[in-house]
Amino acid sequence: MAERPRRQAPRAKRARVLRTERLTPHMIRVVLGGADLEDFAAGEYTDHYVKLLFPADGGAYPEPFDPQRIREERPRAEWPVMRTYTVRRWDARSCELTLDFVHHGDKGLAGPWAAAARPGDEIYLSGPGGGYAPDPAADWHLLAGDESALPAIAAALENLPPHARAHAFIEVAGPEEEQKLESPAGAAVTWLHRGTERVGAPLVRAVAGLDFPPGDVHAFVHGEAGAVRELRRLLRRERGIALERLSISGYWRLGLDEDGWQSTKREWNRETEQQTEPAG
Image (tube, rainbow, N blue to C red; front, top):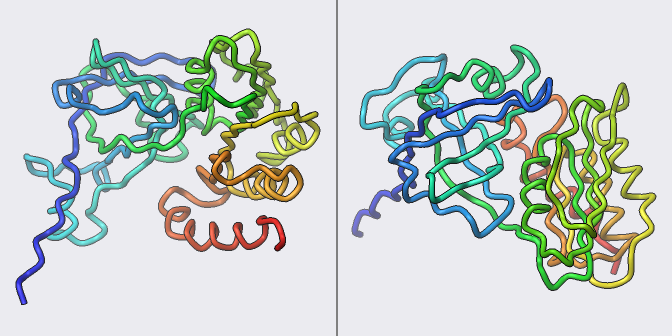
């Protein structure tokens, strides 16, 4: 039997920090560039994402950087640590990739990196992935999420047709975390201030209380997994939105880092489908 050829993973791209900006007390924008991004294939979707690759324990890897070879030849503890971030904006003309990071002090990995990033710093990434863009033929759009979904919601609002109607609900910690967003005149953007409430509670309440307009809706709902499960039940069982008109998933889960969430996400998705699909 012939030996199966090794599957080639997409080549990691080296990106360089061009500039950073503190958008709100807890949101940092990092703009990346560099020759490796010249063939970055983004633009089709508004929820494009990349996988940032951080060296384990802050160490370094030999050049050329090959994540697949590292995983084959080194123990798991030395593998690069991946963190997923939505593309806020991609400018193919200037070859600039914009990512927004939620920052909560020293907690986490990517947030502290963004806070400390300076022009000239480098990071490897893979991607982009993605699968959602607002359907211009929809009668109206529902966009709902917390801070983790804010970049994708903002990108979707910017890409709506001028005549589009939309309801966007964005949950953040407080009024200081609101951002100025571009959207068509027919889009109602509602900022929800969480305060001391559980993450996702204001978001679920707002969507449940919406007087749904008539017609075909195209929905994008992402954020904390527990809230997403409640919203999926609402939208599928109570509102009867077809799966093909609904982009919905948990970007993260309370109490877990991305590694922990990704290791349990498939089972969580299976349970969520069983609990939230219409009967029959």
